[in-house]
Amino acid sequence: MNTWKGLAAVVLSIVAAMTPVFGVAALATPVEEGLPVSRTVFGLVLSGFFAVSALGAPLARRAAAKLAVPVVLALVNVLAAAGLVLAALAPNAAVLGAALALAGAGNALTQPVAGRFIAGRVPAHRLSLASGLVSAALGVSPLLPGLLAGLVAGPHGWRAALWAALVCPVLGLVVTPLARVPAAGAASRPGTSAEKPAVAPVRGIGAVLVLWTVAAALATIGSNAMASYFIQIGTQSGLSTGLAGIMQSVAGLLAVAVRLVAGTAADRAPRRNPAVVAGMMLAGGIGLLVTAAGNPVCFVAGAVLTVAGGWGWTGLLFAAVLRVLPGDGARAGGQVQLGLFTGAAIAPFAFGAVTGVLGLSSTLLIAALIVVLGAVAMVAGTALLARAESPAVPGERAAATV
Image (cartoon, rainbow, N blue to C red; front, side, top):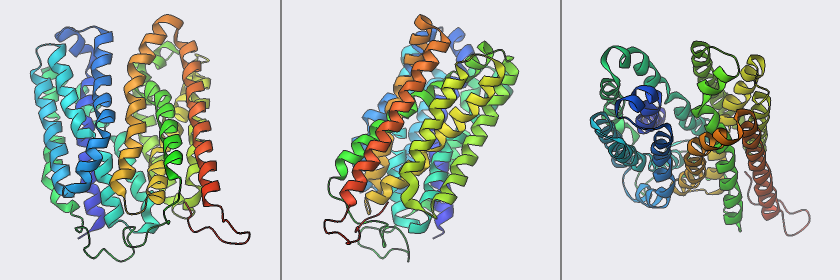
């Protein structure tokens, strides 16, 4: 079995899982006018997708650990397709919300199943690169909906664009057999992380994971707020709508590149991953702070830092958690997902609501502070891990490294 072809199937399924929410988000204006639905309700509908993904993480983790990987991926694609169909037929906001909640349930399975695949099939010295590819799917996911919004929704309407988006989960369903993983107890590929765990289990790892999960949630609130309101922030900073849209695409592609480059580099010194994650989170907070200045130059600089740097850490965090939970990829994926999607669920509605009261600049400053707190939580968790790994006897080497 080709490991990288199987990983490509996992990535395509993750993109398919995110297509319903990004598809509806990209069609915000025609959807709001067509149903009709208020902007506040529309924000709640989008947040509902991520809320279901976050709340479903514990159950999804157990399902991903028990079912065959291709079966889980097939379920992800089927739920994504069902969500798109229901959204395309939605007569009102309630049905649209139900459609995204259904798709969100499928999305809950993505990170745990990706963790299980990586743990079972990817060589230990390629964990960061593989995790970077998985997280890059989050950056690629908005591209197809954006194209469909421009090419299909204009001449044929927003419902037609959602029907056209079905191509992604259909393709994902076709390639799921490529992602087979050896059954428990079966022989693993030589050199895989399942056969040669990167680290030995560390006592007290639960507290570390809690801090890292909190860090992911806090940092995601700021990054996701920028991603969700990118064009609005850009236009209020003095850019045209068209230029802000181009900047959004460029920043998204840059975020993908950062994840892949960071993953490749991190595999050379994997124990530094948590420190790099904290640094990237801090860069995202600085980006929001710069953006708050409210002029075109600061928006461009801040957007690059926030979207590329502030989102670039997800794969490295995934790899770091995989390394401290050797042989438990489903739990690692579920842990990261809980933080990411909790933050993503809070961000769209909260940012819109606070902006309406305090204004854009003040809200961006608050978001920057939240992201910095996330970086602090990441540093605290990493320090706790270092203490847990410290040898009890002077001169004794730690049994586990990250």
